[in-house]
Image (cartoon, rainbow, N blue to C red; front, side):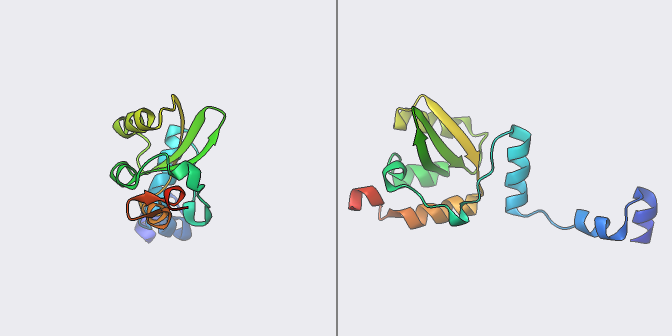
Length: 128
């Protein structure tokens, strides 16, 4: 530690923080900052069944995408990989929305939301 502190000029507590392994959330937040898009913590997010039904479960799982809400003619989605142009184009084609707003989220949070909001291949809207 002392050698590193002398080389870098960092205090010990800063060095320890810098050497902490990055979490999935850290990676997603960093990516969202680089891409200048919002990061969304899905842990307390309540998904609108009418909106989640825009994509079926298989598509949502395969693309790691979660439809969140619609404002005017824009569909907002959470993506594990916001740079996945293929997934974005697929969502645009399936949903018929020309305008799509992307938010970053962790893969594990998206998978958990998919598991909670789709039941055996159907959206909650289909069941209700």
